[in-house]
Structures are given as C-alpha cells and as structure tokens.
Length: 266
Image 1 (cartoon, helix red, strand yellow):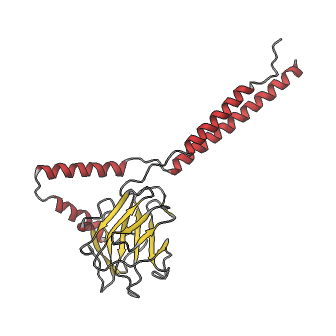
Image 2 (tube, one colour; image 1 turned 90 degrees about the horizontal axis):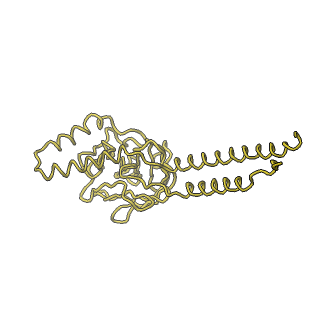
Image 3 (cartoon, rainbow, N blue to C red; image 1 turned 180 degrees about the vertical axis):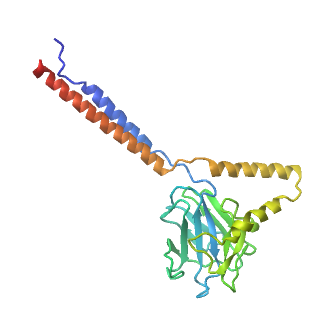
C-alpha cells in the first residue's frame, strides 16, 4: 500500500523559497522618482513679516493625492543662500511650511521645518530638487521678485500650481499682509490666474512657437495625469505576498495533519 503519511516536504520548501524571493524582489524595487510639479514652491514671504524683516518663510504645496517623503530633497538658491536639506513628509494636496531661524516667525502656525539663510530682497533663483537631484520645480527671480511688497508685507503667491513658476504672470501679490501660510492662496488667483496666462498665450505666434507650445502642453498633461506608483504601492504588494505565503503555509500544515491521521483512520 502507498505510504500516504509522508507529506510533500519538498513542495512545501519550494513554495516558501519562492514566496521569500518574490517578497524580497518587491521590497527592494526602486520607487519611481517624483515628476516635475509633484511638489511646487507655492508662496514666498521674501520680505518677512510686520514683526520683523527677518521673519521670512517659504511654503511648498503637494500637487498629488499621495503623501511624499521629502527626506533627501533640497531647496536651494543659486547664490547658495538659503540651501535647505528637507526632511519629513508633505501630505497629498497639503502644504509644507519652512520658517527661517526659529518657529516664532509665524507664532500661530507650527513650522514643518526651520532653516537658516536670508532671501535677497532683490530676487533669487530657487530650485526644488528630489533625492535623486532631479529638478522638480524652480522659480527664477534673478532680476527681481515677481510679486510681493516689502512695505506692506504682502507675500508672493503662486496662482496655478500646475503651471511653471518661471512665468511672472503665474504669480500675484497676496490680498492681505502676511499672505496665506499653510492655506489656499488668495481667492483672486482663482479668478484671474488662468485668464492672464491664457490671454498671454493668445498673442500671434509663428508656426515653430505653436509646435513648441503644443509639445510643452502635452508633456505637462502627461505628467499631471500619469499614474505613478509610490512607496505605498510597493508596501501593499509586499504585504499581499506575505499574506499569500502565510495562507499557503497554513493550508499545507493542514494537509500534513491529514496525512498523519490517515493511517489511524484506516
């Protein structure tokens, strides 16, 4: 009679090895780099506040629906000051506030990070880079800031977070002194932001300019609507594999018990 009490140990071993290998592969998969405009420079208080001209702050905004880990990212001025190594996480569709020197710059709002180094009142060229040193956003105000008022302490606000920060038409002066830290920018940006930029693009262009513009819009459209896997996706896949492996082990254990009981029943 065939010996049914010996379970397929080699099969069990193969399943476990395969599960472990797949788990390691998915855990070690590199996460896709961030795309341009995933996180943008959204508001700049280069003039400080009514309390002190030293109370400068910068606000970032996450255009995506997912949280983004900013560890290893940097925000740098072309002249070397400030140069900020970012830490922490920015929530999906959320804001990230950088306050200069200490957290008393905006007493009623907690900063996400403190930095040192003054912004030049005559303008700066700021770059936002991810951990792979890819350019995610930039604001080129080398000649002068696009908006803001040093006397009234009204800040420089971005109108449309999906459009370039190098277009002066995409920036405005805040409605109120002190701007809108960690909240939506002034409402007038909704009313006039798109209209001013559209009006500018309605000017006559030659064929080459039109082709260049179409290519640019296509690239922006692709980056905005392209689904990007993040670290959370890798974690979910790894978790699913771990659960599958656990279920398989439990199933095989039951099979082993069944084989052990067969001789007794017979």
